[in-house]
Amino acid sequence: MIDNAQSSTTTEQNNLRTDALPNIRGRYSEASDLSKITWFRVGGSADIVFRPADLDDLSTFIAQKPKDLPVMVIGVGSNLLVRDGGIRGVVIRLLGPFAKVEIAGDRVIAGAGALDLTVAKQAAKANLTGLEFLSGIPGTIGGALRMNAGAYGGETKDVLIQATAVDPTGGIHKLTPDDIGYAYRSADLPPDWVFTEAFLQASAGDRAKIDARMAEIAEKRADSQPIRSRTGGSTFKNPGGTNPDGPKAWKLIDAAGCRGMKVGGAQCSEQHCNFLINTGEANAKDLEVLGEKIRESVQQKSGIILEWEIKRVGEDLK
Image (tube, rainbow, N blue to C red):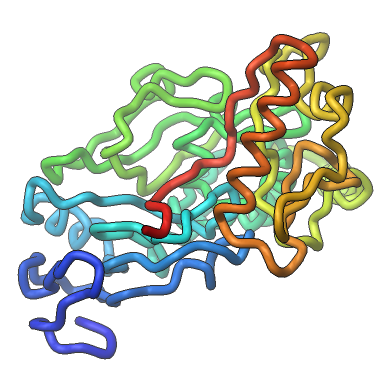
């Protein structure tokens, strides 16, 4: 299925034709404006967005697509900066059946498109504890699997039993955390593998205590982070990783005098200076330039080079 076009329609950027793509049961959309889905509300368009009908549809697409066709998966765009020139090739969005959450005893089976918060809430309804930390992560399970997302004392690798992923030939695999090769906010699995589902380990718990912990996390986020602004979550990785005594990105940024720094419509948050915000008039270039200025300032002040946690993708405007 193709939105608003016949299969012979071409995109303005590189004449990518949908009739050159595999026949699918899902949906192709052409020239999709990605600024509508990113939390920063900036960025250009994708040549094609593909919404697969199910796992088999996704596998078929990947197996039959042109070998040199660029493909990228985007969730809800929470930890993502799409550049102003947009993304060439096909963007995959895992919606519908990929957003389901099921409970199986003390395990939670979550599709890659399920919101982390939804997974935490469903676990709580089943009186399962151990996944409360997910309620503090703005994003989807697919993104959590890809970057070993963590917050408030928990990381994805700590609760992951098994993940399902599609390889670049369309093959479907069941992977353990060791197979994926997790480290702090990263995975060793090649970027062209597509996560589709996670089996997460929880344990029986007290509903009142679970709800209280999730309420505590929500309160901490509201008090310390600009969650009502157009932002993308933590901008830079903590150089100390999960070590509680290691250097924190926000402290280094603050010490370098970057709190409140602006470039165009982009600003380093006054509330939490490891967050960049779009004050309303920013474009992606403003945000990326501001991030690089912050990195330069921190390096000059402390000698530490901050590593981007936000994923920057796509092309600059030409």
